[in-house]
Image 1 (cartoon, one colour):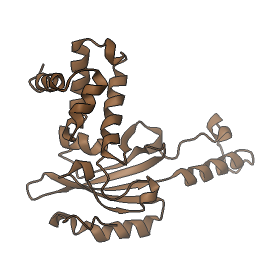
Image 2: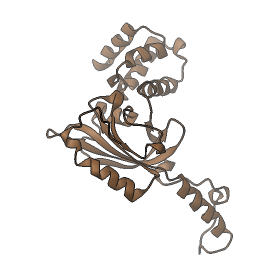
Image 3: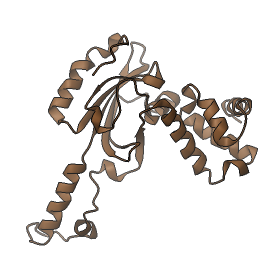
Image 4: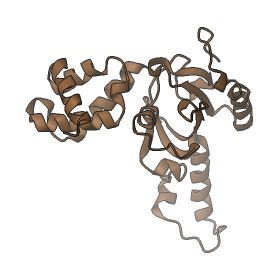
Length: 240
């Protein structure tokens, strides 16, 4: 599905047939997403198998997209492969992202694949539990994870969550701010000004301020005024 009300960048044209190709090749448990970074509040411009994460065309960017644009950590890479992503509803996916660049080398879009491996993981765990009692696996000693069926879906899904797939832009900003504020370990109304600046520094690093309306949400989360948030942001950007 393509956003019919939006003109796609010329750089995206070669990727549209690839989306159908990947969906046909990898099946209905693979979501294929095309992001346009020019409008982060509705960056999803094309989508196949959106039922996997529950998102739709016109949905916002992810926290990973924000971090890539804000921090330029992957300017020397063409893609990221096989990391763990999580949906708002708690689903986990093996995900990969290909960076689409313009003639100047700037990231203007991302082609993302999110694969739901859960059914395969359940089948693998069941098979492991069965073979552990039959001796079919030579030299193998069943561990506690084989008996309990708690082994992870893949090497990617056993690591830390690298991306969260949000369905609405407000949800994307609120989730990012809430996680960062909670990580400070102090209730916002008890934070010192320095602790609030530290929280704003992490929010800045996460790219949350790239989103429209983020300042108001940060102000509410930290129990300060919007002008105070702007002052904290200036302080952070000046190295304070």
